[in-house]
Image (cartoon, rainbow, N blue to C red):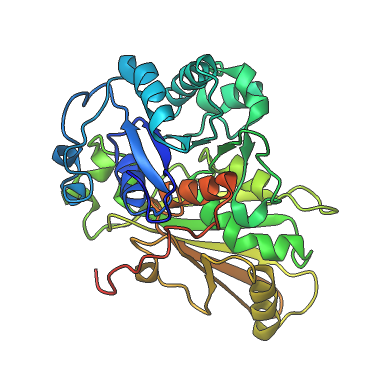
Length: 364
């Protein structure tokens, strides 16, 4: 479909396209002014209408169906001829994403197509394959690709990251929230490197496969911690919170399951190196995020302000000695799908907020 400016849109290829993150990703792609869905790939849903899995997308993606993985090379070649360029996202689970990404890159190379990739799984977040194996219990499925990927958040990463075709690994939702909360403090050298993180997430963070911890009678009106001090996102937080001239961050993380479907509210506790006031912190946060169109600073971030949006709300408080920093975001949005689109906007040369500023309902 030709755009109003006479230019062809960029065609988006989505791997692992049938899960919760994928459904959110398809929603943002469907409303993007510069990107158009070219293929939604799913082995389990091949040939089925997308609207059967995601009825909320029925009007936007009427007539679109999932594509089988075996059909991807043909879909890629066809899409290359129908769009101004291609962009790939992977919403496949960790351990499964890397082989699919490798196959897609190989298919793109075969037809001479430059292909920026944003992976939303954990498969390319750690550059050391030994570290990946230690965390996930298997050898990395595509170790030769690790050097091609940058892991980070646009707000914390230099503009030239992902140069060339652009290959980016988006951090996990918990890591995203903790990093956006604490990065202003770390990079200004205001706090000691030991950080304590407590965060509550919605049930969609566990994916679409039913399990005891997401079963409604157990999750509703309930709150409980899980994997305290041993969650796999803690090493990601430490990587994201590295700061020039500062000792490595040491993160102690306790995640909680909350009685809601979407969103993360994170609190980071740190020891101040010198006395601070609330006004000091407000200024630090506003200066740090002055060029971040999808981050808003508020004294007390609230979850409902972010659910369904691409925006993160951050803030901080202090008693002069202890600093607490907060972040509220949508785990499916900035924590995954819209964060991935934000990265792709940068890789394609669009303003980062392109297609991501659509207002969401005020009362959910």
